[in-house]
Structure formats: structure tokens, C-alpha cells
Image (cartoon, rainbow, N blue to C red):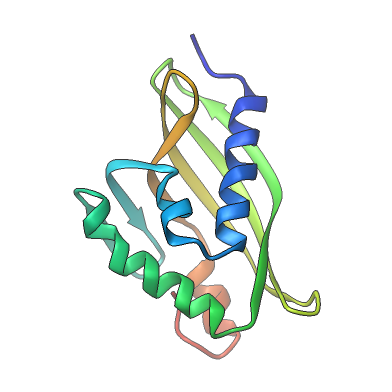
Length: 140
């Protein structure tokens, strides 16, 4: 049975909480392996949780160094593909302490649908690298 949008939204609400806390184990609890992440400038493949931990730790450190306070799920469009797979097109507003927007980023998440909830098996980062470059720095 194809998963309904409210279940996917609830999954991303929980993901946003872990993201906002910069909680590496919490973030990785939303993934299924193997998985891939592709950005404008790079691509990564991870066979298991251990393979992604150092990369994800660097990711959260990058945000922490920029005064990151929270990730707001500004927009979510869910596209079911089958009983097994779906796509979530997401816009994140990454907020700095004090409420200023760090960056607005668009990502597409490739989801594997489990019996209770989805899991992330791929991320396409559409514009995050260029957003950070416009701010005068390198991407994540």
C-alpha cells in the first residue's frame, strides 16, 4: 500500500527536530543503507551507518560554526512512486540564532517505504552549495 503524505510529513517533522539539534545519531536514524548524497559539486555513496558518521559529523560542525539554530521545513511535496519508493521535494529554511535565514535550500529525498515509516536512501541537494558560495564560503 502506498504511504500517505501525512506519514511522510510526520517523518520529516521528526527529521527536522534531529537536524535542528545537530544530533548525528538522530539524523542517521532516518536513513537506510546503502544510500547516496549528490550535491551540485560532489557525490557520496555510503554502504552503512559507520561509513556516513564522519561525513555527517562534519556536516553538523559546519552548521554549528555558522550559528545555526534550527531547520524549518518550509515546504514538502510528496510524490509516491510505488509501495516501495517515494520522492519528497523539500525546501529547508536554515535559521541562524536570532532568526536570520542562513540559507534556503531545496532537496529531493529518495525514500524507501518501510512498514511503519520511510527511510532516506538518497538525497539530491539542488542548490545548497551555490547558496553557501553566494554567502562567501564553500558548501557543506
